[in-house]
Image (cartoon, rainbow, N blue to C red; front, side):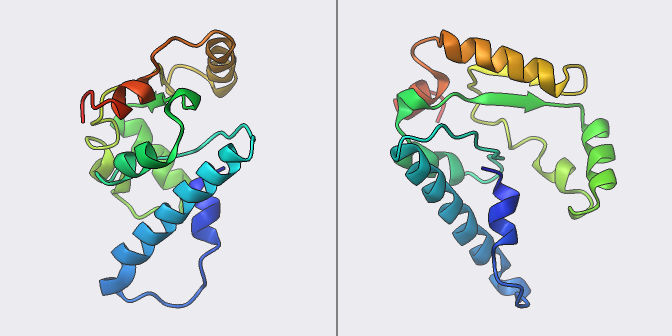
Length: 149
């Protein structure tokens, strides 16, 4: 469930700069609840998420069943992130640099990969192998219990 799809579902009305943060937070909160609802209905969900705001992780911790969540940290050197950001053309310039130090601040993952050196197919294979034999407690369980918050 890509977060970008939820942002694309917002109305196309102009948003005043003074409203933007509120609108984005409300969209992210809706995204979290939609993912939680899909999971609660028995669906396996892959959540594409960036924990770039402090409130996002606690919100997820309050909504998701801790044992059911696997946290995968995808890292990349900043110059490569900036190159990708520019190539996509749908992000404000400098967003990658602005978020670089905050997205991984919670510090715990079940799996971590550098996407500048590990391809998406290899990451997927490794994630599947982990899902076949997950470690316990998971990073999300540890965060849920208060570790590193």
